[in-house]
Length: 361
Image 1 (cartoon, rainbow, N blue to C red):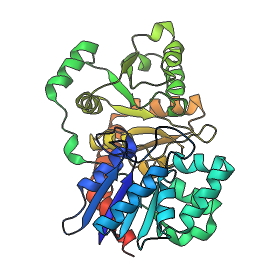
Image 2 (tube, one colour; image 1 turned 90 degrees about the vertical axis):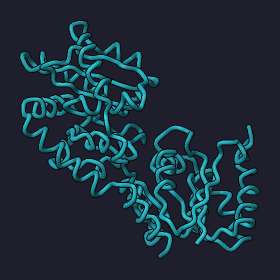
Image 3 (cartoon, one colour; image 1 turned 30 degrees about the vertical axis):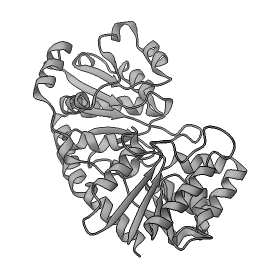
């Protein structure tokens, strides 16, 4: 079977969705054909206009015809799903549509987009959800599509977690991390990530425990300056914003930290799609503190690879931090269990096999 991955986001384009598709392609098994049609050269979308998707219809049709494609994996419900839906009336192929979370949520907000989403999904062979939360939302809004739904979570690459020991030592010395309990957050600095609540929770932890804690925040985003303004004057040496960091530095911090913290929450329909960083922290045998947002429940199982707290409650986040900070045995246990689970359940080979099984049913 010749399969085509049809997507706007694909490496070297950066981001979680692009990494998801790139990793699926990298782990596609021998003996199976996967071709990729992406937008890295700007062929699929017009520069502007209400029908920016129109070029993608022709490009997709030519690819299906010239390469004799049997199955199209549609990376974006809107707008690329329109092209697949349109071509399905004229060419003999099947298509499956990926849904990651916010893509589906945004489509539901506008009546014409919701109508188009129903048309696209009604002719799809499979609806491939990246987390169980969005799968549940599809069932809620389109219950007649139940038999088409499949779940393929993001995976992790175990070969990427070898932290550079020289970088680790430099960071330890630069920030004076000897005898400190290091908290670490990595992500775009938007409201749902819960950095604000974490800063507020940290300020509620009494001495002498709080004197042992140091919190590093990596990433940029629209809330960066606001979050800096939340840090009390006497905590400026305990809450440190790193800005954007390299991939090499990311793994050094993951390996250095004692607790990975990201108590994400749902805000007006904005939710965490999955949270691959939780599993990346687990790969480094680190426990995670997570919130109840979107697809996080797929990545984090409370008491197994971390703690799940009420992310709307500063007190609950504080109590979770205290529990982990005071108990090194618990940290080690959750971290080791998390690493075993990530390697066993979320390796990319397994996720890719799930996808192939779905589209061959």
